[in-house]
Length: 203
Image (cartoon, rainbow, N blue to C red; front, side, top):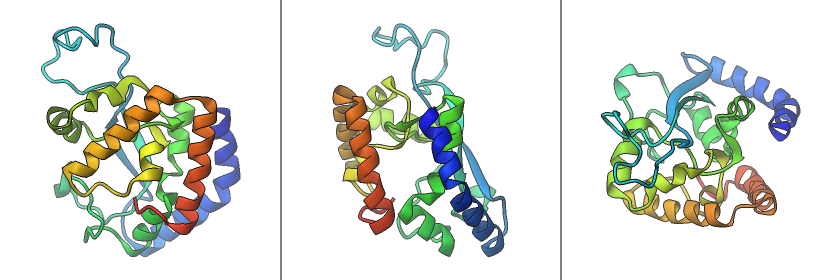
């Protein structure tokens, strides 16, 4: 949380500029909010029912509200769908924010709230989570740790465009979970910088 607080202080001028650019370039709110699946703290995760008890569906973990700078035009009819690299909903400034990951800066407040870490698997939307959990082996195991703003999968693989991309990212996420440590997190944070500045990996 101390890292998140420091990050908010250091990036406050950038966030103010980004907020103004989002506001003047397209109609709609500056901050985009959306429910995401967080860490699974339920006991009995390993039993045959997955510890669901009386749940009618497996959301995979506690739901929380994620914060991002809005990068798309507002359309209530869009629903929970993936955004593709050339998605026509993405605004011009939004494309730059996604490429540099500046749209993720408000998630520092999610870290302060305890919903996320700086480093960890990226959180997914509930309905998409349920679909991927059925189709991708080991997908639910990502919920053993808090989701992150950046992660091993994000610095080593581009934006998800197909199921194979998701499978590769899950492999990388599980690799991170097995080997995670303060030094590994520092390495990932360091690798995130060139991704933001040089746009080596589109996200």
